[in-house]
Length: 149
Image 1 (tube, rainbow, N blue to C red):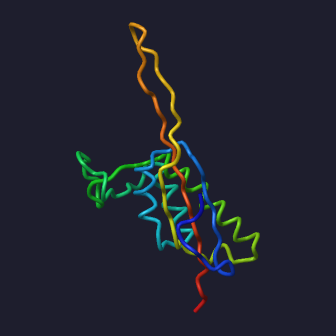
Image 2: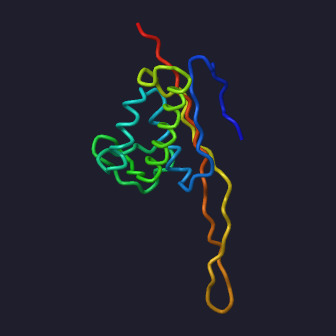
Image 3: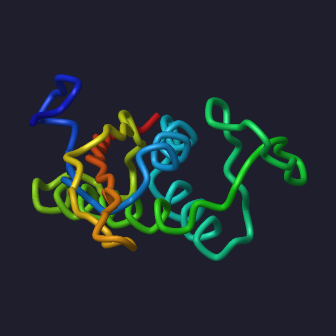
């Protein structure tokens, strides 16, 4: 499993979180909001979502969702926000290691894809069982250095 986009290694840093135990649908909606944000703004936004102070607008998986103030249909995907925050911090530390200005970067690519399904079963009455599967998510973040103007 690789990255979805090619990037210039001189001006970008990448990080990927593989098979995280988070909902792919929630991660998709959070990643959609992050694309184009500065790193510090994205980290602040994710911390506010994790603290249930700022909702994430949902554009695709929004059936029966109640409207949130100033956003429309949305949720507070706490677990997804924390997982994506860890991947962004990893990409930021990769940028520091490469010698890039980690504070002067923006999120070029934020993508979430379905990962492997961890299969298991729940025992039921009369000797039966029910599938009890857990979805995983692969999160990729590519940060790009902003040209100082």
